[in-house]
Length: 390
Image 1 (spheres, rainbow, N blue to C red):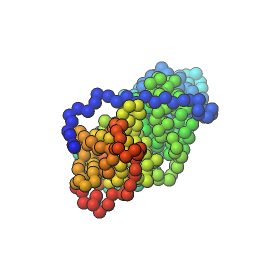
Image 2 (tube, rainbow, N blue to C red):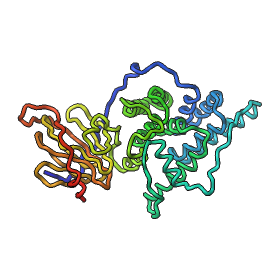
Image 3 (cartoon, helix red, strand yellow):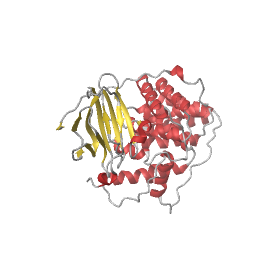
Image 4 (cartoon, rainbow, N blue to C red):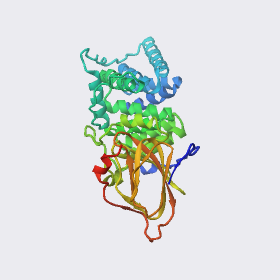
């Protein structure tokens, strides 16, 4: 039943059309529009356009230090070279205004991080606040690359930078989402920070306008992708800033997804009652063989279920998981493993207790002979039996 493959596919193409006419006809305020313009041009290092965007930002009421803070934050997401070039543009605009005798509003100065602060704990709680997580881990004691990145993330990005103030969390996440959407090819992070922008007070309409601006300022390809991401993040959801809505943070998803072939997609809330924890769904193909990538947090599995009108092929993509067919022993699924499940067969699948897990689910139309269609969702898996799996 299980086959190992060394090569699965060269590419899967997702083509989704978004009808902009269905959105409300509202206008983003000039301040947020300027944050998006500055962030977008910084991400792609379009310095000529960035100069105009900086001037527009000053006219829209952004202070010099607030614009500078967008550029400080940018290095963590699009790199030091782009950040330093962008800062040089801000400096040149300042010199130009001074030479012309124009008055500049520098605004408040950034906060300094207290020397005795537990920066790891502060950063961890900032991530929990932004993305709705419940992380409680202590600072890693090892110095391997995973632990070091975790420390830099929490102590530097989410403490040294976020503690500086000047921009609200809502504005920082809007800037970050814009940078990632403009940069391209980083959808796991783009999805995570668009979710962060939504949770922290940016409305669905504002995020659609962000996508519109990315398309206008950067390119049609990037704009279309941004529309797809915003649609995934905001469809059927409501922002709940300050209220945790998930048991894991978007940063945790970022870390796992960066090592996987496919983006995690959006929370699979429509089927949440059939899963023991949180999972995410990324639909890759709707025509012909329906194909999606499903990502499970550690310990999340689905209920026993039966597909009546399709055979299901599961392909391990990342992490480690389990699958069980009724009457058989549970089998592990690792990246590259292929599991074929015939229609009418009762089964379950999901993550191992200590590992994130993602698999492709490919559906092939095939009847089980009963005349039934769709999927029957049944009882949860016996937790005691699952907990024994190692």
